[in-house]
Image (cartoon, rainbow over all chains, first blue to last red; front, side, top):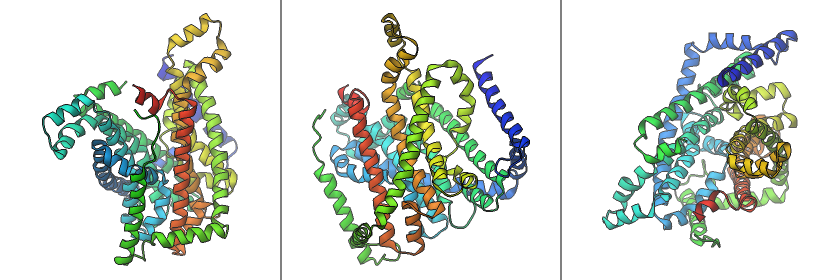
Length: 252
Length: 257
């Protein structure tokens, strides 16, 4: 049996066991796998559910753009100058140690319970992996390259944008890969309370109605979303960064 | 390369400067409705620590955190070593692990609440579940990635089988395991506080939620400071532990190269 087939067989076997166990002793808490899939099949194509998915992904995209821009700017500045790095390091270390859930009540107080609050939580949470990716990437620029840039008398801005940024791209891409699963977590966290729609709201609402198969379905959807996001980013990274030596080296 | 770490005076002065700037901004722009001043936050922090409220919530959070995270470490390292050492187990579990791993840990909180109620067992379960995956995956990859020459040397010296696993594979995999543990530690803390925020009964998360609902901003921010310091202590502590346990890996290795 091929390696993949064995893994698949075990997975299907586990699903079968779940099905048999749930059918053998029907409980409210563990619906059969088939019931979960059946409900997912019915619910996922509906406008309500797709609208919720779109709302979550839209906020994720906007939050990512804001957070990544800020993280990139600070990370590049910290990488390009030792002085800036020493100055900002304790502040950044403190800020990134704060679990994003602590941002939620803070953002609610400042922005209310709507989209602004959610986007703020996502933006802050996603800025740190990008910041660290940019910082590590610039710090790894070989001294010869730095010396050459200095020799060419490139200004700070030009040096950062034309030398450090391209050199740091694989590391920034790695930061984006790290950010993707965090983004899913932030979707859930930012939708724990408040109004409006979203996948997180969907799960919370179905749970409050004790619709157990729907709760399983929502969690399953997030897992598939995470899987798809990761695959998409891996593909984009291979396509966009194939010119970079570091990309092929880092691809293992 | 700098072996002795100088205290970063400029950096900490900058933290103080940001606090003073925030104080001025809140006062001058009259933002009291959405942000408390740092001085009011410090006062609230002092009061809440002296009254015993915050220490009690902190103890509750720490208890579920330590137990849940400890469970994840034991299970994650154990399962990870098994998966890393056996190709059969690795192949058999591959699809199942790939399926379960991307599910965000916080997403299973609503389900766990239905299954286990709001008490301590539910919290420990959710924390352990969320923290398990990074440890498991890093451990398996580290055990699997051990230089095969190491095993050859061990075999020629008569070390094989389970003693080889303990005396060769495990030490060689420690840097990878340490990375997994460090990643999981932040996830576990996040989930620990989130669970409390959702259930709203006790712990730092519940305390934050209650202060937010009551609109007691200095107290809310005081709790945020405590959670942040806890996260900072976990990060710094684990990094120091890692440097001690595996002086040849990570930052140190990069610095030596």
